[in-house]
Image (cartoon, rainbow, N blue to C red; front, side, top):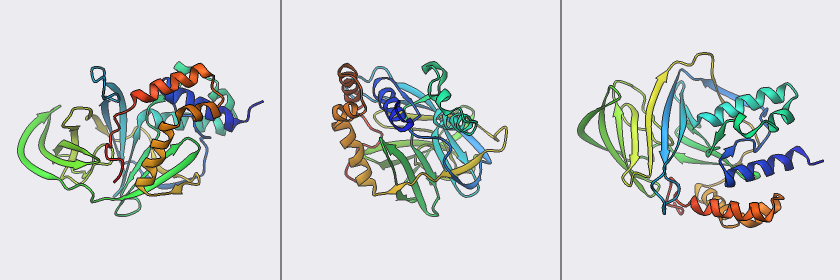
Length: 282
């Protein structure tokens, strides 16, 4: 009988490369450090074009920004929901039952990263799992050198102002709302005099738009999962990601996937050629 670790590894690789990620790449009930409480939660609709050779059909997923006291955390909404559900099952001793749920009964996401802003103080902490490695790196929280514009508009009843920045090999346009006094936004972006309502790169490959902001229905903790994270540099993290892509056949083989599934994984990985951060050598 396969161990949980082997089973989870195979599920993660299969769904990551053949369909979309059922985020079950690890156990859920890790010890966690409470960093604070979410005072507000902003939900963004995220559209992206992951295949630069086929830009006609964007993908869409909802992302969440939890705003706490002097810090925030950003992640996929489905990733968060999946983690909370998986943790509940595991605490009840029903982890195997959760892992065996039908595909359409799980929360599915392309994104397993978590981004903490101003934690540690003055830093952006990026965490993600590259197959069996839990990796994290830090960036300066003041990495964004915004150029403010006098141009204004209205987006979803929000009065917004335009700003622009170059980051990660892309040029970005942001529309922020000074009436929402949070110097924050989607993904790693922050540092404007108001919450970012809409953000997109000038090629229109990536776009975030605020769809809701409000207080959580119940107490929502901002937690830092203690999973034995390996601290690395951003450059080495991106190298690890690229190495995984380049060696997808051998990784799929190690996971015990069939030859047909290995080829399917390789074809699907080849379509994921348009990362949000194009600069792979920062």
